[in-house]
Every structure is written in C-alpha cells, then in structure tokens.
Image (cartoon, rainbow, N blue to C red; front, side, top):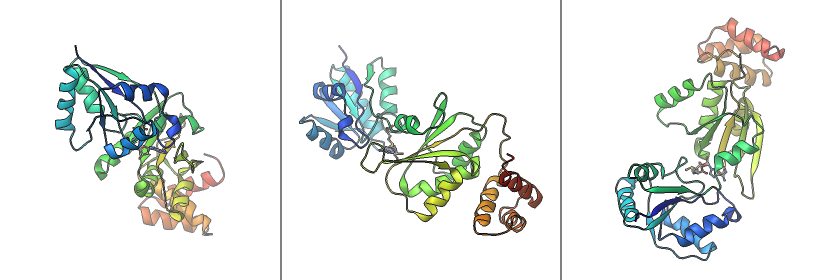
Length: 282
Ligand code: SAM
C-alpha cells in the first residue's frame, strides 16, 4: 500500500510556533524531504529528533521528486519541510504535490506558520478578499506585465520580497499603484525585532531610501478603491516626484513642471492631479 506525503509547516522565526501535530508528524514520518538539511537539523535538534533526510529544492526537484514519489509508492511516509513556513507556498514543494496528486498518492497538509497569513492578518487592510502575488518576477518585462495586470485590482495584494530587492520593489509598486496607496510593511514576523509599518507606498519609498532594509519582508498593499480611475503609465511616478519636490520646498507649479519633464508626462495634467491631491479632493 502506498504511503503518504505530509506537508509540514515550520516556524518563520519563532521556534515556539511548531505545533504538536507538526512535531508528531516529523517524528513519525519514515523520512524527511528538506529544502536545506542544515536548516532542518536545527529544528530537529530543538525537537530532540533524529531522522533520515533527503534534499528537495529548486535545483534538484526534477530528479529528487520522482525518487521521493517512488519511495512513497513503495509504502513509506515522507514529511516535506522547507527552511521556514508552509511548503509549496513560494517554496519548493508545489511540483512534488502535483507529482503525488497525479500519481494518486495521498497528500496531507498540516496547518501552521505561513508568512502571508501572518502578514495579512496583522496588516490592518481588508482581509475579506485578497490576492497572493508571491515574489514579483525579476525579468523586467514579466514584472511590468504582472504589475500592469494588477492596475485595477481591488483586492488586498500580498507580495514577498528579499531585503536587497525591497527598494526597487517599493519603487515599482509606487509607480504601479500610486504613492498614496496604503501599505503594511511586515518585517521579521514572529521574531524579536518584528515590526509592522502601516503607511503609504510613497512614504515607504522615502523611508527605505534613508534606511537600509534589513530582515525578511512581506508587503501587503491595499487594493484600488472601487470607482477610482486606474493610473496611467508614468503619471504615478511623476506624481510621487512632485510630492518629493514639494517636501523639499519647491512651489507646486515648478515641481509639476520639473517632474513632467523628468517623466515625460503632460505638465498641465500633472499639475492638476497634484493640486487635487494637495487639496484632498481625490
Ligand atoms: N513558504 C513560506 C511561507 O509561506 O511562509 C515562504 C517562503 S519564501 C521562500 C520566503 C519569503 O517569505 C521571504 O522572502 C519573506 O518575504 C517571507 N517571510 C518568511 N519569513 C518571514 C518573516 N519572519 N517575516 C516576514 N516575512 C517572512
């Protein structure tokens, strides 16, 4: 009889978040498939467990996946773990689950820590409807296409990002959705230096221009308010520039003219939008 694949979530920072059921599943599995055995061994030490392990990560999944499936079909149980959080969510595992499902092998997911739900729940933004975007593509064209596809998104949006790419991503999000769009920057969740900043995209751009981003981040961005016109390409970045120049003390007319020149948008349109915004008419 075939065994089973268990998806076992692991803490995203606080070891106390491993559940009893997750620990029992790890203890009882015949073997573990781990993204990085050096990371998983620390968790096993904490749980005082010793288990046979194989690696399963994005660079070996083509060969490791069928090998793991073969062992499960022979009757073994496998617990899949990644470095942190829920396996298969922006993590290796998605392909293994699909492989097992296609082969008719049972897969059981143990509920537990997941950065996206922790961030969404603490964000203060609407949680009734949301879309998880994971990591934005690195390829400029694909990234732009993904952001353009979200221009009219009314649901709350959740993004994962690495610290060294945070500034570029905040810039791109501010360009795509406008500097006034609300955002929760959720940093180092469940850890000692956990921080949740609730601000606008424009404010976040400014903050991290002045401060090196450190730690792990989830960005939760408010959706487009129903009825609001989608922002045209370039306008948004130009408007953010006007705000910045205004904060530096430049008169509105001059700021609009300079930003219009820099971003190649219509001066009059930009001036009107900035004026509306300053008067709180939008
Ligand atoms: N499968 C994991 C999950 O859903 O929890 C996510 C794995 S993904 C490779 C790693 C990303 O999750 C990080 O780049 C960051 O965006 C987010 N993340 C993980 N732990 C975090 C934490 N403690 N605080 C904030 N973000 C975290």
